[in-house]
Length: 279
Image 1 (cartoon, one colour):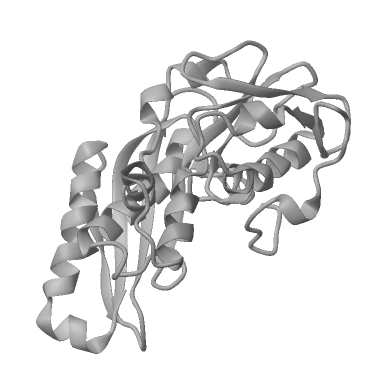
Image 2 (cartoon, rainbow, N blue to C red; image 1 turned 90 degrees about the vertical axis):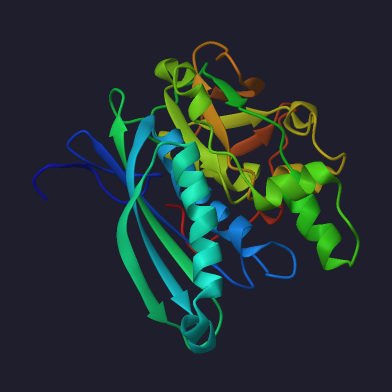
């Protein structure tokens, strides 16, 4: 299509110098109203979409929001107002005004879809581009949001840090300057190993990961850090260490594999959420 420089398969599509991405959060899958307030859910929907722009090296410009609600909630309007309050909080925090959207009836449950538009700061930063010798790096601790879900599911109260990570994720626009030197990147939404595998496949390299570095500053449960998901931190590759990132491995010659630094393969079963595709 004329003007499209990047199509499906990355965190954002690119139309000229604009990055565009869409994300959907679904009740019972990404959130529960007995775990999070409607305001938290609205924030999370915006933040999840915005994180894709951060990973693409784009600054937010505007968003469109579509809200699907059960009929009884549409009648009163209270729930939609609260959801939009949280969404507007996030849009104000990250300079991404909501300029339109839609509200429709849903047979059951609540869904929010957010389309974000960003201005590229330079060439698109994609999942492909990592080269052998690049350092594999993450922008922050992993596993805290997954810990919240685990504890809430068991009827226990999670640590405050875990609740914040689950309810109010933070898209990492504070690291856009660091990403100027990155060769590839992805936001970690489906789990570190699942998303690292996508970078490895797209770039045609093998990523050798240091297990201890991967779980540093996490909640002390390796599976949550490696495969829990909904971290919304950034995974980046670059020839040198990036300010604000922690080195967790290195890209080596290979063909889209994940291995530990001792050479053993990372089991597919450990990799986290898979939507049925590698794009």
